[in-house]
Image (cartoon, rainbow over all chains, first blue to last red; front, side, top):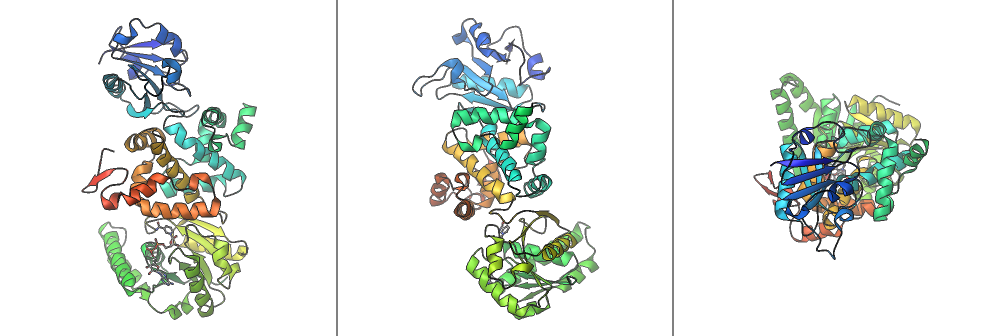
Length: 213
Length: 291
Ligand SMILES: NC(=O)c1ccc[n+]([C@@H]2O[C@H](COP(=O)([O-])OP(=O)(O)OC[C@H]3O[C@@H](n4cnc5c(N)ncnc54)[C@H](O)[C@@H]3O)[C@@H](O)[C@H]2O)c1
């Protein structure tokens, strides 16, 4: 599947050379737009509707911000994506591919294939704040920080429990230390604003780390 | 605190049978009590099969296994527990049943005998309150399957003496287990984090964020977890998940612990999980389809 790449700079998904950025052709039926200014990248694409698929990199915003929405029937050949990454850690193999209610099936299949051919795993989700992983893990990470404050157990005992009890490769406290508490604050705060659910409100320790960052 | 030589395990269902294997394997004389004779017989068979595997895998020598099995004794007479230095309780998750058992045990066991409960969701302090010896009472929460999982969450009740907790901690290490210390708080550490996490995952499906298979794939890939939340829920079963949620939510009123409505619909529809061939995933020959 030939695809072209528009790099608007400072991509969080592809901070370094990767099979996906290197495998791009000069032109293609699929266009991948990465970086922090995908709106500009999207605006520069000629005859957008003739492309099989256009895939734009998302931050914490919804795809609808770039495409517009229309009473639950929105959907086109434009999809969103983000390669999952925790704070300062390397991006993972996971790409969350964002669709809308009426996204073109051929566009979805083509976009999926481009990422999979580059060795990435694709999970498809609808256009809701936090997509899958952030929506699921931010309340868990907040709860771990709160329980540490409440003295439920020591940081080490909490981490050990989740590693030995559930086979997690790393406990929540070690994970937050490795990837950055301030980065957790940023994502949790964005989701708290978007969802209004107290479970996302950044925990005190994340707030302190943010203020010191 | 006297040396611990003889261990009593009260209740030998899913958890008790595994805990008894752990105690016997660690070299303790282990008495197992259950009100149901068939539970004792089943546990004996399971233990023999487990240790036969240990020999096959070269983990234990045949003569070690004979010694272990000779030291692992089932009984239907609670009076036999007068010989125990510690009793680990793993009967039904019901405060009344646990209180009734400990009240009897308090009369049977010598004063030095430590009492421990494997409860998942009931307060250690509350169980201890009906035991006649709340100063010599600790929480010892093993994981399923106990004979394979090293983790034990240990919690003191409000009246547990430091000496009793230390003695129980040393005993847990002597069992070859890995103790962690937690407050006597609903769900301790593991279930406190796991139950709301699984409920959040179910709510993602309810909210139409993504299909269960996509969520499992995303979590495993992004976080390096061995199992996705729906694979785990299908193993646990929706009926069991509902019970744990009700206990946790009843104790905490934490919204994330409340069981999502989808679980009750799945139970009504017979989609209990792997055991009925269908939960969030569909199973045939215990292989996962569409995951
Ligand atoms: N199943 C798990 O995953 C798990 C994990 C950790 C802790 N626990 C806890 O372990 C305890 C036991 O759970 P389980 O899953 O093994 O239950 P289970 O139903 O498999 O076993 C309970 C056993 O206790 C026996 N019993 C009931 N009342 C008794 C009494 N008065 N005297 C003697 N025996 C009695 C029953 O006959 C049965 O064999 C519960 O407190 C539960 O919360 C369970």
